[in-house]
Length: 484
Image (cartoon, rainbow, N blue to C red; front, side, top):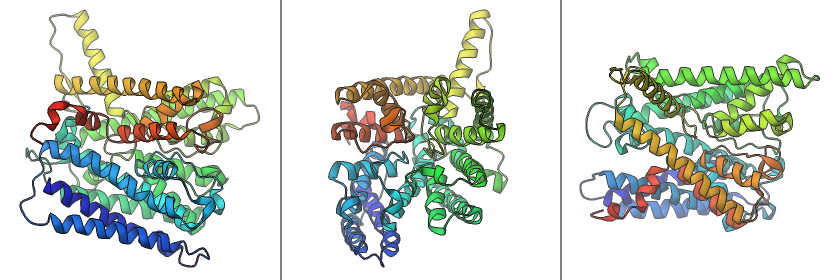
């Protein structure tokens, strides 16, 4: 437990460090908004320092059970501490109650992008910047977590990426500091590149910084109620599409290509499928939209479809228009795209592309086996052996995803939400997308009017989805708590 307390303390200290930037942004605020961030920063730093100091001696080890417990407690704990500025903010019209504050913080750290805030255009800069920073932190956190811890926890087929993210050691975190450092460097470099590109395209520097953080993290928080639709310039929307794709592509793929490593075949295999899938769906939907909406040119239809399809598939949640008004086909398409997700090792949520690829491979092998019962067929994907354990893990993950989706949908219905809001809310929370469907939580709405009970259900869904489901469910196993 010493390792858990030590790591948790370091995370709180790190969180307090990031609170300095929104504090600085609000120094000139007439409402003295900076005081809230200063007090929150001191509290997090003091508590984190106390935990580090009290557990600083001894040998630090991280067992499998410790990794599960640490992962869940860190994400839950940091979400609660991240909610402090929302709960105590000096601007009364932007001060949230406890439920809304936790909802906003969890949505930020899990890079979901669902929000309870309205009138964002007039919101204090500190609050807006803090929301974006939370998504930036959550984005880098989930990338490092998915490529250093999940392969060793054997969650949902992630063991397939064990050799892609480390050496062949059996230690739970081999060379984690090298992986984390290289990933942070790429992540930060891309963030700065996006700031520069958005600024050149015409955004204000403040908007560019905020949207760069929420684009690369595929989070989707915006500084405007109209989301990315506030920026009408086609160039900005194409840049947004490009950078969301960059966020949905494995970060380690950039590293391996840069240093010339050759064992990135699996990451490249799923990235190609991701890129091709986005292209095909965007073109197909654009052709249909161009045909049915006579007032749009094909270039406009392609731009709108490419942006919004990419936003939903990468689970970013930005919107340039209310795509639910495009007709029944688009509503159905976006609903299914909600759960797809980007690549593993990226900041995207959802089921992930590689799991669909594994299911497709398993299905083809089974069909070939039915035709030739005595045949011997190779089991591989992207040059990597595809074991029964991996296929089984993926099948269990998808089954649990569907089961939890049904449970969440039923629970939301019991809170009084309508059928469309309940189903899309469950999907958008579990897949960490952000906007759902319908008039309440659709691209043109938000989660302000959702009952408090439903918000807590959605908070649970966001956390379970972000932590790859099985990481959370294992804590409910009685055998887990034996010899923790």
